[in-house]
Length: 510
Image (cartoon, rainbow, N blue to C red; front, side, top):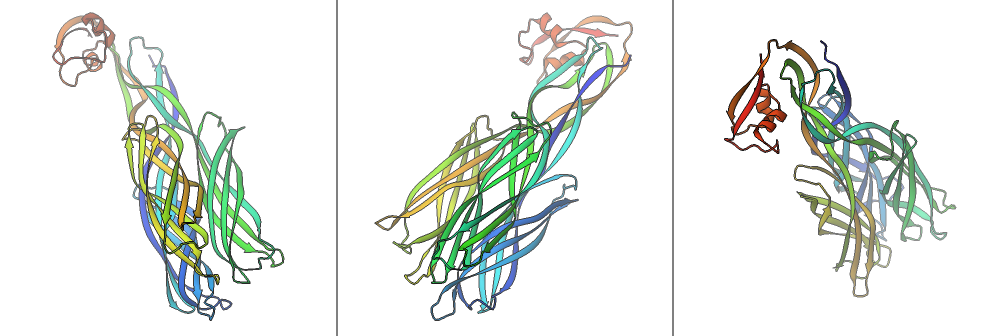
């Protein structure tokens, strides 16, 4: 007779490759005719924008640009501070052996260094170091047998799994736009530095859509006609929708943001304002936590069965936790003293991540680049310091085998020069850790009956348990059942079997 089976399906998200690469982008830049010559570089910073990224067979390709802002001391009688804004376009191809064009690519690209060398008064050489963390994953739909309904004595070895099944993925482009108004007395000459950061990320799910919400924090340092250096800050809302059919509130959403392009455009001098526009892509993967009982092995004492068993790797117990690390310090920096601080670039870096039971221990440092007034004539100077930090996040069910992706968001920063010329430093780092654990499981996706035994009878044999034996293995070997062996031998817990124990095994045979 044909076996009657019931099947179910899962969409498995499997990590194929994770790697970290560093590459260099460099080019020469010419000072525009309307700007004075460069004497020396004071400060340089950059914003990375990704135009396009794709997976090819055996490699990935990333196209983007580094929007650089270089503040320099001009070769004029007044030695004014001026700036140079230039773009470094790049195309980087990274070899990834297991990459296939139908897979998914997740990248995190950061600017690790920006060096500027003055070649002559009208030309500088710019060298940028970029670090890219890439993760390639594959979504596979697998079918498995969960039930056989017309074979009475079939024996199943089941195992409970807490797995994550991919519901779907999608993306959207959002344009965050606003006009930042300057003081009426500020006649703008040029924007000297732009810093943009996405913060306060949030998601809400309703009506087959994912609502993504965040804030774009913008900080501009600009020069006025009367040679004053000023700071302007603003917050631009980022709101968008991602269509994901069949998504509901109990599902887990993993949303990543990527800045694709930024426009900073001063308006007419009479308007005293600067137009800001950022093109942002938000990508979302949604998961459903499922608790499943899956067949890992099977047999029948009376029927020979042939089945196909596959080993697949899946992500288990994907969870997200957020916790704030409050850093409060006082620093004495003689170079700054009581001078005005225009801005501080804050760059946190995780140097080591330790996984303990129910805890993640982070060790790292925060790089602080102070931009402050150099003299009473409107000059500017910089000073960089590094502060170590240690932070422990409580995270239930974390083990040493867990995979952890950590996102650090600077939710607050404040730097105040005190009367004693120390700097009161307050920084809040919002750590978001996304955990998961890979596990290999067996699925049975095909089964057929080979032969029905005839003239069958029973016998009893004596067997002594050996190392590595389980009642399931013994029962399958001798065409018996775990239940029968347990009953005959008075075994209360079928999971406990002592080596050397004598067992009476009722055997069904032909």
